[in-house]
Amino acid sequence: MRKFNRVILIVLDSLGVGELPDAADYGDEGSDTLDNLIKAAGGIDIPNLASFGLGLIEGVDNVDKGKSPVGCYGRMKEVSPGKDTATGHWEMSGIILEKPFPTYLQGFPPEIMEKFTRETGYGWLGGMPASGTEIIDRYGEEHLRTKKLIVYTSADSVFQIAAHEELIPIDELYRVCEKTREFLYEYNIGRVIARPFLGVPGSFRRTDRRKDYAIAPSSETILERLADRGIPVVGIGKIGDIFVHKGLSEEIHTTGDNDGLDKTIEALKSGKSGLIFTNLVDLDTSYGHRNDPVGYAQALSGIDKRLPEITALLGDDDILFITGDHGCDPTTPSTDHSREYVPLLAYGKKIKSGVDLGTRQTFSDLGQTIAEIFGVGKISNGISFLPDILK
Picture 1 (cartoon, helix red, strand yellow):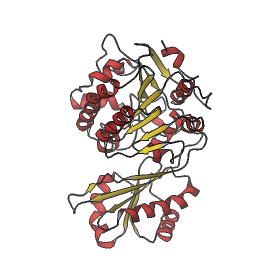
Picture 2: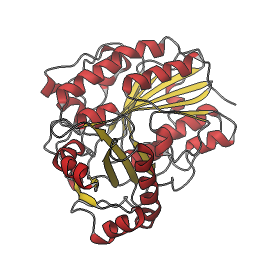
Picture 3: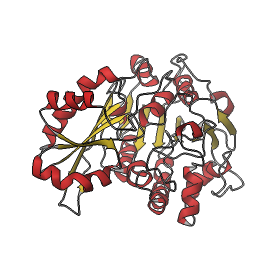
Picture 4: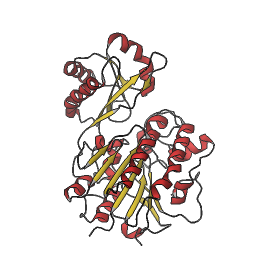
């Protein structure tokens, strides 16, 4: 029997809350996205997240702890190897990976780049790990002159292709990414990402027509389980790309976090039931990867200010979860994701207040809880915490 009508799951992309025990294995010792950015920014204004219990989570020191949280709070540990978007989202949906996706910290090998040219018909520039804005600044002028595509990676399993929209039409860039995705299945690379940009040398800027081509989830997710039982799943932001469009009854693309919040609010107002699954990516792409703690703090505060618009629309049978998928500490020398715990916040009229959920041993506890909420049977991994929070 379904215990709720709707679950709203919002992922604050890259909001980590402290290094995992194995962070040093990933070069992330000392990473603590939330606390470190607050110190670097000289404070933060997030009263609504604080009221849910964010400051009471173990290891969080720089957020107001308050006295009477209205929600339940805890943190989740990532079991899967890696620290990328797909790994985090898949684990919270019930998949625990045994092997990490491959990364190319020394750059892509000649074999892959030769296949790229052969399959797509384009030459390339770069081919190494780099910040997206930095590599576009470095190679943008040569790209405009030669029509060679800018290729780069990061500490994640990604093959990113940047091209100027006025030189390479967006549909052509997408075609190139699709061809690249096809031959990279052999290498199990997690995502191919289209990175269009505009502007002139010295003032290039990435556009909002990014598109991800991910590898398919390795087993059933909570999204597919819900869909198989006839329960709607609405993906907002890049959810559709992350899950290769599986298990979604509707996909709503966004142009940024404010638009993502607008679309989430519209979905609530329209009376949609089932799972509304939103990814807010700007914290990661615009501030974490660019080592901008002040911008990160301002953006997180902006999200916080809009949360009352969402909670005001929650009915008696709705529940809101807020979490992250990895860290991306903007205060460390690295511009890559960081191996961290992520926050877990729960709020709803049928949910207790002030329950400390402690440290969940896998992100999959969230997926298992959603499975119990909708009464669709147990998924492969995780322990439901619904009994702990239900009134």
